[in-house]
Amino acid sequence: MTSIDISVVVPMLNEEGNVRELVERLAAVLRQHRDESDERFEIIVVDDGSTDDTPNILEELIADNPEVRCLRLATNFGQEAAVQAGMLHSSGRWVLQTDGDLQHPPEEIPKLLAKRDEGYEIVYGRRAERNDPWHRVVASKLMVQFMRKVLGIRLPEDVTTFRVIDGEVARLLAGLPEKKKFFSALAGWSGAKSTSVPVAHSARHAGHTKYNLGKLINHTFDLMAGFSVRPLRLIGTSGAAIAVVGICYALFKVGQKLYGVDIDDGYTSIFAAIVILGGAQLIALSVIGEYVGRIFIQTQDRPLYRVGQRLGFDEELPATAKSELFWSSRRDEADPVDDVPVDRASGDA
Ligand code: UDP
Ligand code: MG
View: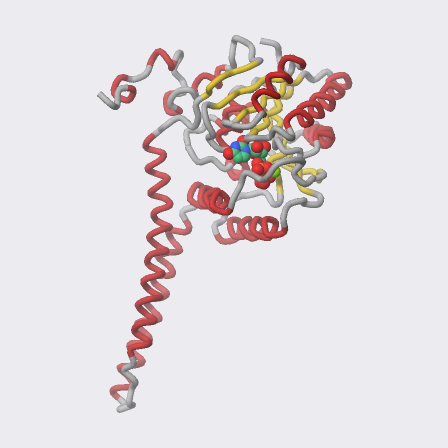
């Protein structure tokens, strides 16, 4: 296998309007960098189940550019799974992650690499000026502050998925057995020496965002339930606080009665209390449910993705690439495909 210094990993879902320009601009920047620094590169585009013309354009790009490879997932597994697939198929000493919609201009890559040369394991691109709709910006700032201050999750502020990561660290994190990963929080957990540099941030070049409100909420719960048990404790704390208020109120009413004050036995207050407490209990149950659901997904132990096709890769794949076709908890075994454990492989029998 030719030794690679920088593996670029790009997840793409229906990016037909961006893929050609992105790959060509990435290749131009990295060829120039190779000429200056002798660092060799590969560009791994992970096609996350595109149904538009992205796969055909990719095939043309692979034919014209020896550095480009495509990992085609069997269907849409989501951005995080696609990135992990790409990382596990990478062999570079460094992994450079970027989005596939040109929001991260490839011409900014030298800034990340220059900072890396100062001795960091992870360098994040920080948006000098963010080009996203305002409600996304406000929601994401509130989310990060809540996660940091209330839940105590170690999360870098205002960083993007435009980042250069030590290859060992990237593949270690991508290969962790947990199913719901949140990369920047995991990076904080790993203790990797990280920093960020300001980079330009453009509006999406073509097409639409692949995220709707539901997906963003899901992502937020992945972070919350994946990195903190404080919400569970907060349920107990708020329950105790509500109980104390209830007890004080009851004692106050008994006192009033004893002193002969004419108390009002209205139903409105009882109704309000039932509705408020009923709502609070359902919220508490759903928070617990988020954890239970994730335990359920984890115990199913399904692989995160299935690769449909590999284009442009060397015959000899990196060792980390083979495992994710199989079960993540059996990552170490030599030839997993021939070695499917009978009890798990024949679930229908
Ligand atoms: N993406 C993907 N699979 C998905 C959703 C998104 O591979 O299920 C890719 C998408 O093509 C893009 C990157 O992930 O390259 C970021 O997605 P997007 O630009 O839609 O997110 P936003 O910038 O709006 O947060
Ligand atoms: Mg985008």
